[in-house]
Length: 448
Image (cartoon, rainbow, N blue to C red; front, side):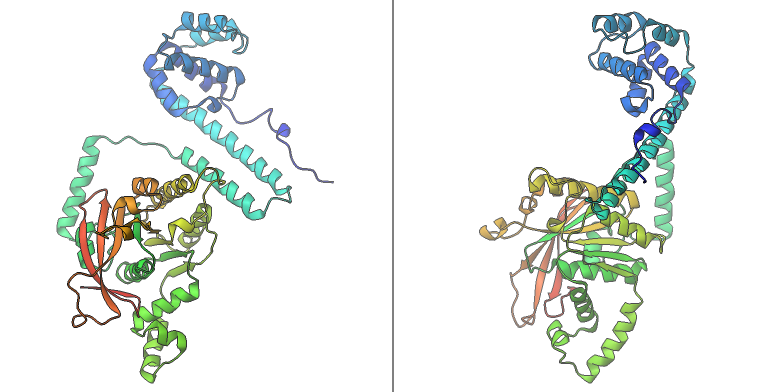
């Protein structure tokens, strides 16, 4: 009978580099600057041998407590704290001090240790996945999500951190500026609304964008307008995660927006011959658009990453990812603490995904009822629900608010209204307010 594999089968031998570990530890004993470089890159677990782990911990403790570090002070500390046997005795220290490393190759020694550490971690993760698969009371979705989350952590560990000199950076910016003068375009992804683009210069790659407002203000309609405009102008695919509305409801909205037939008439089936002509034309167009809709009601961060990768397997890049809406999402980690902490984990994870795939992510968010209790009903950042984490992680915050000043029925139909788009935060640009016209019957935004 098959039995789950245990770690004891492979624990005795895993990838390691004994000499590289000795060289790094020796470097820490002879050069303080080397310690600073090493502790920024390696951890205790990076070392394979237990006595090397113990020695690294002691040197790290002494460094953090501003104690002088050399063979004499280290030996004294180990003896006074009864740790000399844990590191393998005096002979290990003598071997280290006799092993004079070439500090020119320190980065290479560190790279070798990290490479072996990541290989060990990957092997252990593989065995963990095998053992978890035998536990039948764990759902397959839970196992896959945990595996993907841990694998994502290893992937981030593997990515090398690079340092760029000012001369390389300034030359790169010079070429970018020259290209903009020669071929003037928006630096970001166009929203399709010229007043908004003039203030934001388009949606920038790797940005987390929050669109906030009270219920029924038109957040979903605005996000769908952005998705269609993105596809039309950039020809890039858009991925919409709808936690509140079904995919059928979204398609009805899109049809209403594109045909200018009210949702009421579409849903009731009260259509004229001219409406069918419009519908046939628009259905053919919409069916060919690279628009992907997911209406899972219990969406998690791992599922978002997985589905982004699925789309990327068909297309080279994604134009935009839209999440409707933030407060309905599941925490990426098991639920601990209050909802504000969970939301903080979610917004931080969304920002990481935006950076990982280098795409703008738009997340819709509810505003608290505080805005309705004030005389001035213009929303502010503190009106965001659990605003601390959202405000901190977002690169751009757009708040929707109905503008009732100076609007008469002679100017607009009852179904039309003016919506203020308040740029409450923009990390790399100005704040301000622009206005768009919103047709509620057709759930359509238009330039004013």
